Length: 116
Image 1 (cartoon, rainbow, N blue to C red):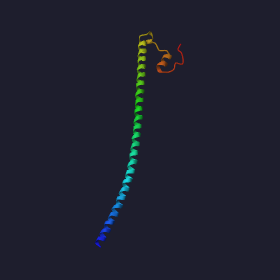
Image 2: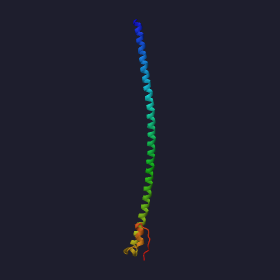
Image 3: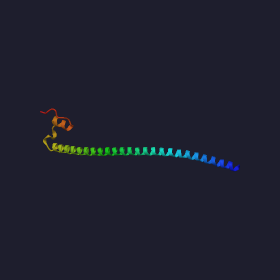
Image 4: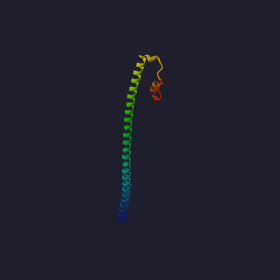
């Protein structure tokens, strides 16, 4: 009789362990599924970061190019202004008021009228 109850006990223990193993297997499958979803999200985030970094690098290069162009224009304008000042200092017009058209040009305005 004891063997009968021992065998039943072993069978019940085996059934319970099989059920528990099945639960663990289901949990493992759910964890693997969640892990795959997380990996996909991280890969997507990494692609977004790379795209944003590329856009930031392109913006930085464009800004550097714009600054270079502005510096070149500024250097050219400074050289022209220096040449104009030197020419005015060494001419008879150095102590006379400039014509309105010249003042407009120096101020960056369109010369719309002519001086007498």
